[in-house]
Image 1: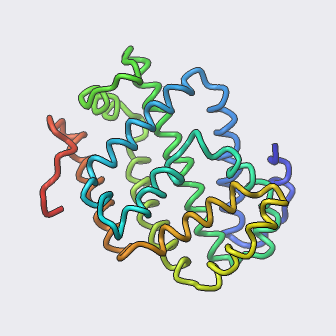
Image 2: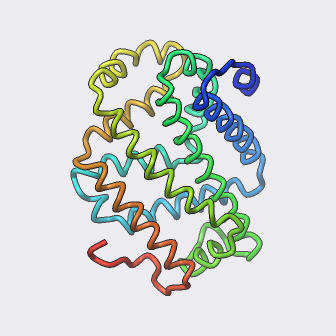
Amino acid sequence: MYRERLVATEVTTDNGRLLRHLLLAYHDFRQHKAAHPLLADTVEVADWQAQRLKTTHQDLYEHPGYHTGLEFLLSDLYAPSAMTGRDDNIDRVFPKMVKWLPDHLLGTLAGLVELNLTTQQLDLELAEQLREAQIPADNLTVAQYCEAFRQSRQLPLRGRQLELIEDVGLQLDRYVRNRTLGWLLSMTKAPADMAGLADLHGFMHRGFMAFRAMDDVDSLIERLVSREQRVMDNILAGHSEPFRLPADL
């Protein structure tokens, strides 16, 4: 809907150009995915993986200092079927973003867009692998999931996904320590609602509050990435219980 606005907006920095490039790629992918015959299967795959993540990291998920942040990561950053309004809002306000936001923040937003795009591309590919193997996505076993995972033609993208989680998570933590940002988010709710940007504003406010509530984001991100790297290594090595991790990890 707003693709022409993205293309027509003048950008003058590398981060601005990167953000536009990724928003265009994400816009086109969303159109492709919306018309894809396996759209419902990608939702099943995403739900299965979200539940797996909660189980693998149950100790962190139930920790009072981390729960809100992890819930945001799973429900907002990893919610491919629920954020159409938010994504349209970002496309819509892109001209104002490149005009008013600091360039380093545009770089962080580019990382968020790439993470969302990468995650959804991998979900769709996994759904396609399951269909080729005639495995129903709504009744998936661990063994079936791992076999489809190993058949991926985009395994390097899995590594990139972990890099993005680490980079974006640490950058977001630095921003939420800014008290001015919190004040601005609280003051701009009504104008955002009036401008039809409630989805985007709500996403930003939830993220701000979630990360502010966490005890030690650096440690959390480091443990998440280390654990998920071990999970990926286990799957590729054919371990029978790939999601079982050492107690000290």
